[in-house]
Each structure stands twice: as C-alpha cells, then as structure tokens.
Image: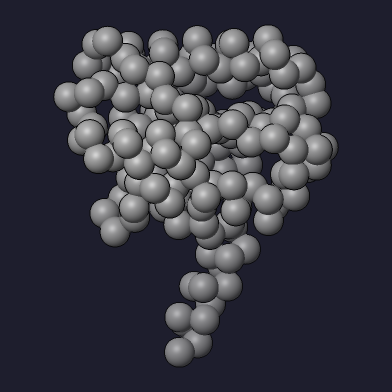
Length: 172
C-alpha cells in the first residue's frame, strides 16, 4: 500500500455491516486496527470513528469501544442509512481538518459509501477498504482497491500476516 507514512489517517467503521466477530473483545478492536496500519507503514495520527444506535449495541460494548479511544457518533434512528449519514458527516468534518496527503480507511460491506470514496480518491486521498468477504456488495468487491478482510483487520492480522498464518496451517 502506497502512503505518505506520516500523513493523517481516519478509519470509518460501519458497524451495521462489519460487526465485531464472536471471540473478539470490543476493547481490542482499536489496538488491532492500529497494529495493522502501523505494520503497513502508516505512522501518522490514526483516528477511528464509528456509529451506533443504542438499541443495537450493548452498554458494555459501547463502554469498551469508548475506553479504547474510538470516537463514536450516535445515530438517532435505527436504520442503516441513518447510521451511514452519521459516518458520512464525520468523514466530511475529518476531511475539512485533514487535507491531502491523508489516508481514509473504510470498514463497510455495503455500497453506501462508494460515492464519497470515489470523490475522495478524485481529490487525492488514499482510500483503503476493509469488509466482510461473506457479505460484501458487488460494487465494492469489483471497484475498490486495495482491500483487506475485516476478519483479518479486527484480529490485528495484515494481509501478509494472514498469508503467513494460512501457509503455516497448510504446511502443518
């Protein structure tokens, strides 16, 4: 992944399509994401932003996410489009404060952010995408590069870590 290593980085995490997998603690998500970004050469400031609706997230999960340093924006409505709008507004505010060179990491499995991502790429932002391979919108899987599995990212495994762990399992 090409990057300006000291550029600012934002991670926009759509919890509607990329929930925390079972077996992964909410408190470890921030550290796992930061580990992958640092190991991939992104050494600038990292801000992680997510949205939630209180009826969809437990109080313990919200507390763990907040404690880990992730900024979360509350959606007043339960539907996915409302949560996406909250994240789009947060992304817009972030881009106003962080001009290029800067990196945007989208964690989402639906096409709700494609227009914004394409605009950011056109403006010169480096955009990277992570999603759940088992439930990704075709528009994402065919048009966005580079991509990283959400399951790998949330466990702190970058692309090469995943390849190495799979090859060690295969050789066992």
